[in-house]
Length: 137
Image 1 (tube, helix red, strand yellow):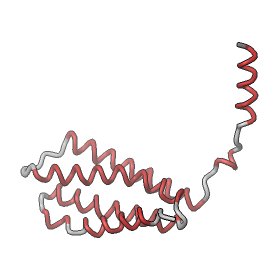
Image 2 (tube, rainbow, N blue to C red; image 1 turned 60 degrees about the horizontal axis):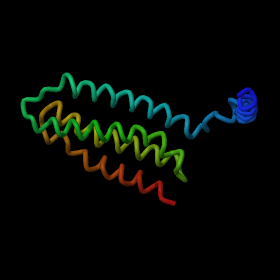
Image 3 (cartoon, rainbow, N blue to C red; image 1 turned 90 degrees about the vertical axis):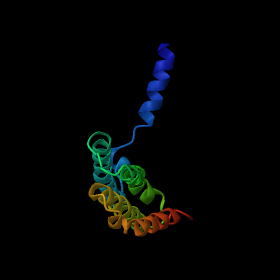
Image 4 (cartoon, helix red, strand yellow; image 1 turned 180 degrees about the horizontal axis):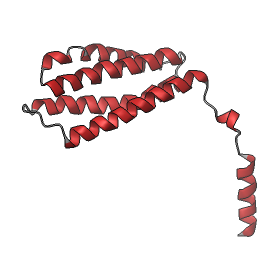
């Protein structure tokens, strides 16, 4: 047991990375911050949707749920997309703009119970499609 602990101890010691090696590039750091804010907002929206959102017309619950699901998923992609992309800022901007337009428009339509306010959702959807396509080699 002591021998295996010593071996594991040596292995882990040799695998220690310095803070410099683990620091994100400036291109990625900005998207990490934006993703953090977006993710926090998505969780707040999810909590409100689960506990406080009571529209008169139940069809708006589906709009709110769609907004929340897309918001949570694409908050993750705001940080992961730029890591994998050839053009990190373009990919991050497309995921951010698409999420804001799609989810924001759906949230607004649901909260105001006015489907006309969701008219920007297709543009957000197109930006999200472009963001996903930007990940192709």
